Structures are given as C-alpha cells and as structure tokens.
Length: 133
Image 1 (cartoon, one colour):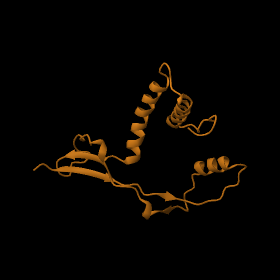
Image 2 (cartoon, one colour):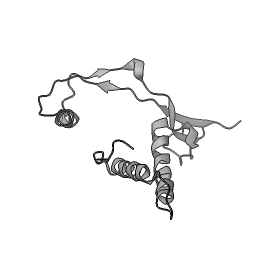
Image 3 (spheres, helix red, strand yellow):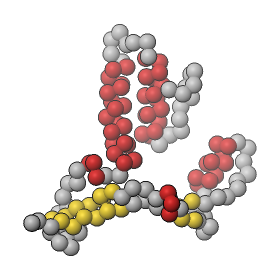
Image 4 (tube, one colour):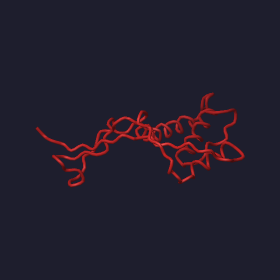
C-alpha cells in the first residue's frame, strides 16, 4: 500500500489587550494594527483553528525532498478556501449586475462589488449610499 508524508497545520490565536488614546475608534484601531510590540502577548488555545493540510509528498519522510503533490482543496484551510472562492463569486456578480436590463437589485450588487474590490485591494470599506450591501 502506498505511503504519503502529510503536513498538517492549525492556527493558534495570539492576542494582546492594550489601551490606545485616539480621536476616533478608527484611529485607535489603526494604532493597534500598526503596533509591533507583542511583548505582552497571550495564546488562546481554546480558540485554535481547525487542522488542515498544508503539504503532501509521496513516500515516507519525504517532505520537501521530492516534488509536492497537489492537495485537494477540501483539505485546505476553510478561510483560505472562502477567500479563493470569493474572487470567483465577485466575477460572476459583476457579469450579472452589469448585464443589459439589470434588475432592481443592481444598486445593492454595485455596493457589494465595491466592498469586495476594496477587500481584494486591502483598502478600507467604501462609503456605501444607503448602508451596507
């Protein structure tokens, strides 16, 4: 029977709680996100993520010694799977929203597209007329 070397991973949340002085919540969040001092970090073992496959190789003890195998996507990290599918769904939404005779939900679709494009660009959420998409 064939043997395979499989590398699995799980994410362990590491957090810190620190007070920031700022004019707005957004400014305080920006300060926290840009703060590189993690000297008071804490690990949250109760909230660790699911185990997922990050590599596979044919044979025994062959990790990084031979060519890696393509791991079926259902064994990947759930958040990454969602992100990968997100781009596909965004493309489909753009095609449907801009088709001739677009339906009544066009405004909401445009808002969802704008937010999705901001996420992909790593930009802040856009200002949406009439609230969230």
